[in-house]
Image 1 (cartoon, rainbow, N blue to C red):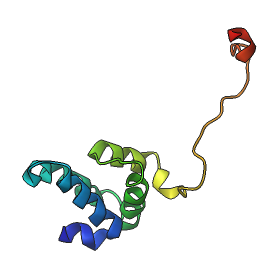
Image 2: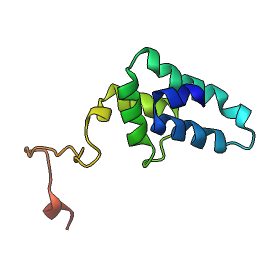
Image 3: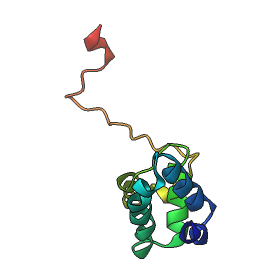
Image 4: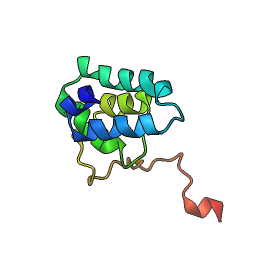
Length: 99
């Protein structure tokens, strides 16, 4: 918990949530350590931003946090849309095809 608190309040909340998610907190130590160890690859600011994005989305796994960091979603404000729209081309059928 102290390690997470040094990163920021979102990190502390995420670790607290992970520890509370198991019947025995000892079962979640490895998950917490893996997530906090991401600090060796990323700055504390990026980690804190990733945790801020993960908390409302209920992302509590190493893989989920790493995906946020790898795709740089931590640098996108949570209010900004992250939807990707497809461009139109000849192979798209459109809604009239399904009616």
